[in-house]
Amino acid sequence: MVKVFALMAGLTALLAALGGYVGGSGGAVMMFVIAAVMNFSLYWWSDKMVLRMYKAQIITPAEAPELYATVDRLRQRAGLPMPVVAISPQPQPNAFATGRDPEHAVVCCTAGILKALPQDELEGVIAHELAHIKHRHMLVSTIAATMAGAIGMLGRMAMWGAVLGGGGRDRQGNGLGGLVMLIISPFIAMIIQFAISRQNEFQADATAAEITGRPMPLANALTRLDAFAKQIPMDVNPAAAHLAIVNPLAAFQGQSLMRIFSTHPPTAERVARLKAIADGAL
Image (cartoon, rainbow, N blue to C red):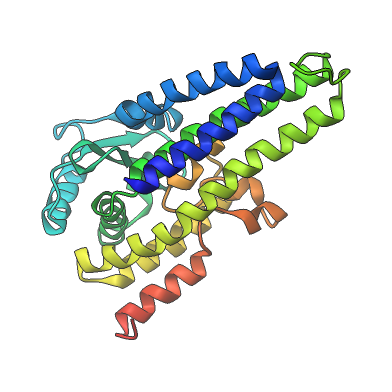
């Protein structure tokens, strides 16, 4: 919980600073209040916000009996309550977990992953998402995702406010300053996501291997999913990209500089660690 409150406080301060840039002291106060309301909303309804970002729908056991049974079997091995199960219509094979705690968790698979992976690899992926739930990674990641989206939106407001001569203090329509705000504010939010997400992925991979007892199906799934992500685009808010098991925006980023700042660790490194676990080296 310390990490959650620290993240909320840091992103609230950043939103208030951006609000001050756009609207002076009044803007800072307004954004502080908005951020406080957002933090409350994120704690209670973060899962619903993320599901909307991925256009996902909650499903019943009757609608996807095999998926539901797989999640149920693996969550029992992990010692977790049954999460809500959802499916996103995205054709890119991918998956994520969200929710504020294990009692209010969601595991979501895309339509693409249900078609692309053999059963043992799908089990590895689902175990990875259950591992995020077990380690309570989801709330911090979800808050970072939603707050990053808000910061990016405010950054765009700062740019247009400066271009059109708005803002609190006398900036004389400094369009360059607004452009800097547009670039810097999402970058700061991205750095926060970067710091949170990478170690969480390694930890979830290792725990997934414990849940299934087989590291290599997950390793094979990661390799396969990474290749699909580079070929099949996904329509998702970039602020929520770090929640997925592999970077869903890889098709857009290609070999660009943005890959250096990916919230996901390199797939090759994740696979190497899983192979080390399989060989007994870790």
